Length: 376
Image (spheres, rainbow, N blue to C red):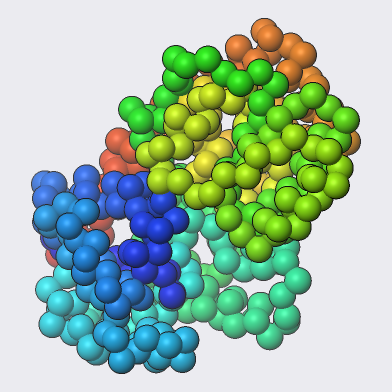
C-alpha cells in the first residue's frame, strides 16, 4: 500500500529541518517506507523548495511541494483546498490518507471525498482543548470545533496521543472510525543515559519560549537558589525572559534550537529536567528526557500527568513558582529519590514509548483499514 501524509497547514519540510525536528519526524516514515506493509510514502507539504530535503530521506519517501504560485498566506489557504485536485494523479494511487495534525485536515477530508480512500486523522494534541487554555476569540474556537467535527465525521481511523484526548473527543464528537491511543515515540537507542559528568546543580528546559510553557514561573522559582538553568529553544518570550533573568540575578543560559539527535548529549550533562507548562499534549521532549534517565519535574496538568507518576518516575508540582521551587529542592536534596526517578523514567519509556511499539500499533491500524476496505 501507499500512504499520503498531509503536513500541518503552513508547515514545510524545510521548517522541520530548520527547527531541528526533521531527524525525529521523518524516522517513523523511513521505518514504514519499503516495509512489508507500506511501499511508498508521499509528503504533501507547504514548502515550495522542499524537494531538496528528499536527499535526507529514505528513497521511498517522495515530497510533493506546494507550487510557487501559492506562496503567500492567502495562497496557502487556497492551495489547501485545491491540493486534492492539483495532485489527483498521485492521490488516486494511494491507499491511506493521513493528517499530521488537525490544522489542515480539511485537505485530507476533501481528498477522501474525491477519491474514496481510507482516512486516518492523527493529532499529537487536541486542537480545541489547547484553545480552551488560550485567550482565543469565540469565533475562532467555533471554527476549530467545526474542523474537528468534520474531520472525525469522515475519518476511518483516529490516532490520539493520550487517554485524556480520547475521552474528550468521544464525549464531544460522533466518531465513526477506529480510535487508537498511540503516544509519541522516542528513539531509545539515541535517547539514553550518557556517561559524561554532569554540571552540578544544573536544570534543563527544552521547548518553545511561549506563554504556554510557563517559563516566568520557572525563573521566579530560581531566584535566590544555587541552581543553573539552561533554556533551549526559541520563541516570542525569549527577549523578555533574558531581561527578567538578568534583572533578578538568575543563572540562566539561553541556547538556540539544535538538531533533535544532538539533544541527548545536551540533556545528559544536566542533573534535572523541568517542564512547568500550563497545558500539554503528549510532550515529546519530556519523553526524551525520561529516556535519557533524567529525574524530571513536570506540572500536574493533562499531558504531563498522563506520563509522570508522582515520586515514581518523576515529580509533579503545581504551576506556581513556590511549588516548582519546592519540587526542585526535594529532588536535588535526595540522591536516592533522583536515582529511583532516573531508573523508573528510563524503564517507562523503553516499555511504553519506543519507536518499535509505535510502529507496531500504527501499522496494525493500517492493516485493519485495508482489510475492511477489501471486504466491502
